[in-house]
Every structure is written in C-alpha cells, then in structure tokens.
Length: 145
Image (tube, rainbow, N blue to C red; front, side):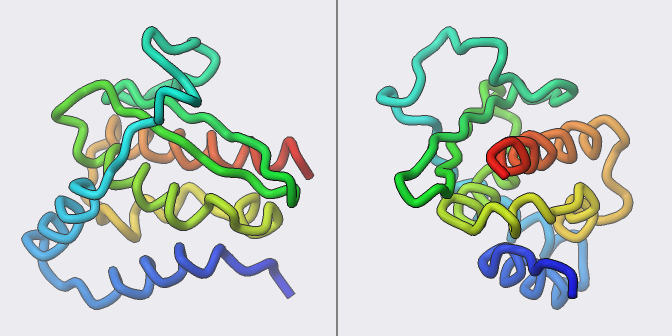
C-alpha cells in the first residue's frame, strides 16, 4: 500500500475537488493566501541565506525545515514578492499540511498537486515555481528519512 499524504493536505485536495469555476478557485486560493505567515525572525531574518531560496519560483520564495524533538519537521516560508499570492497560498497549505506530519507522508507528496489546487491552465512559469516549492519541502523530509 502506498504511503498516504499528510491528512491536512488530503483535506485540502478533497475541498478543491468540489470547485467548478476559475472564480471559485481564485477566491479559495486568495482566502488561503490571506492566512500566510512569513518565517518568524527567530528562524530567519533578511537577507535570507540563498540556500533556502526556491529555485525557479518567480515570487522569490524561501523554505526552512526545522527539526522537532519527535523527528518530524516544522516548515517555514517566506515569499518576497507581495504579488506572489499563488506562492503564499501554496506555502500556507504546505505549512499547515506538512509541519508536524510524518516524514514518510511528506516525502510522498507529488508536485502534481499544484494542478489540483491551481488548475491545468496554470502558466508554465508559475507551475514550475509552485512545483519547486513542493519539491523543497519533500526534499527536507527525504533528507531526514
């Protein structure tokens, strides 16, 4: 049996299955982006170490993975482009879904979930950047396994 996705990520995916229009999708993603919290100063301060930059993300996203005593990870994000709502929404989803989740579940996330959230008509550049954001989170989980 394949390893399940983090339960909160699966909940988001299930919620998005019921969206039928671009407008609904955009509204839902904007609501999620509004919940985005940038990395706290205790974790990182600007200018950020380039090792945390998400390569290929036009919105200048950064990811940090901090080890928990239980072996799981807490993820932190920042998006430097104030217009980067898609990256903010994806970061908020990944933070809620992956922070504290079993590493095996996080390591199992496919970049294809971008299309579940943003639709198949997402631009190639935006799709690549959001996929790389997911890949950064998955990378940290796999490194710890």
